[in-house]
Amino acid sequence: MLFNSVEFLIFFPIVFLIYYIFPIKYRYLWLLASSYLFYMNWNAEYGFLLLFGTVVTYVGALLIEKIRKDSGEKSNKKARICLVVCLITNLGLLAFFKYSGFAIGIANKILGVLHIQKSIPTSWVDYIILPVGISFYILQSLGYLIDVYRKDVYAEKNFFRYALFISFFPQLVAGPIERSKNLLTQLAKPQKLSWDNCKRGFFIMLWGYFLKLVIADRAAIFVNKVYGDSSTYPGFYIVLATVLFAIQIYCDFCGYSTIARGVALFFGIRLVDNFKAPYFSRSIEEFWRRWHISLSGWFRDYLYIPLGGNRKGIVRKQINKLIVFSVSGLWHGASLAYILWGMLNGIYQVISDCWRYLTEKVGVLAKFNKKTDMDRTTLFSRSLLRCAVTFMLVCFTWFFFRAGDLSDAIEILQNLKCFNWEILFDGSLYNLGISKEFFHVLVLSIGILFLVDYQKYREKDVAQILMQQDWWFQGIIVLVMIYGILLFGCYGVEYDTNQFIYFQF
Image 1: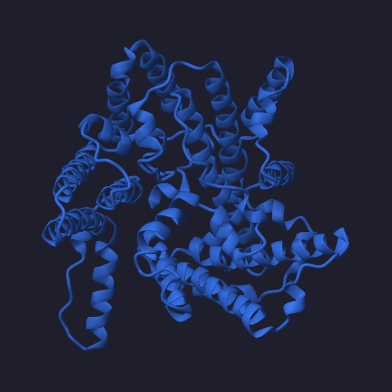
Image 2: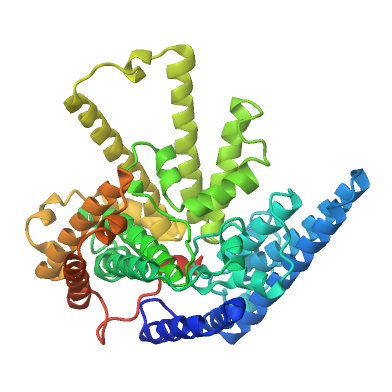
């Protein structure tokens, strides 16, 4: 069930109304049943897989907590064994459903290089269907399990409440990846119906639908056309399509997270804000502090720090970063292109760290980084330049992400050699599925996104600002947004309901 489907627009109000009819003590049970119905709408078998992973981590956390009550090395060893078993079980499920074909393909290539005639059969892999959102809810459950092992949180005794923590439908299939300290504690203390929460949630949902339907799905038409036939649309077609894909994936993923936050607010639950104006970042490090924040935080706390973080010297720190970003690429997809995408981001981080080391320790160009009494114009120009360079570097990595396959990426790179800059002015761009009028609408919508994100970058909450206005002004804004979404959004008989990009991960 997609957020941008008619089924969800019927499902959500029903769930909301019945939720507040239930006695407050048992509301979480209704929300749990609704979440499983929401998830099993794609495939009923998915629900049993979700339940299995939930049971494993629930029981594992209880055992770990019980074992760790006793002090001593023997108890710690038993707790570690229990943790490892649960980790292997859940990661094994993820590996089977997501990486079986990829692993067998790599193994067969190695056998071919070694001139071994036999190969591993792959026909059965075609029957494996990747469960929607499996990467997200497995990371969420493993984060909880590790937190219990570290004694950062308590092990939830109520199985149904814990099951809701894993399956809460707004963020189940594409995040944000919630921590038990935030979501589980809120589920334990349900809130009364709040008009302010509902109104704010509705504003946030409308913005999410604007990002998805008006910007992301419109940009996708152009991007799919170019990347689907790069030999016909080479050169600057590919450059523009890559820039638009950077906008598309941001609005698509941020749109989902935004709708999820809005929906959750109707139930009095606050999810983490997964994006904080990432394209205004002035460095790759800042970009990753603002992009997919819940995933970046997960890899930092549960992979980068256990590997040693920055505690074991400058060289080990850079190796740890490369490992983390490579794993992040693999998490996004079973393809060498995704791994390369992750490694590129890791290499950016390493280069940035080395540059900082030179400027701070060796003294090279130290004056350039030293704070001075420069005029505001010079500071703005420097920030603008850093922002533009960061965006271009990020767009280069998105190129491999969008290609999805390394051989396709190489082929598209070869088609970049054509310098057909004239297409930017001769109207050729309007022959790729988007009319001139709708292309202008897309550009205007991106401009609106720019203004809103600029306010967000300055730590200003646009939704809160809107909440503080008079009722008639709020009504006008809501009507304009609804009208804009209905008039300029991509939906109806000539469009397929576009699935959110991150559902495939």
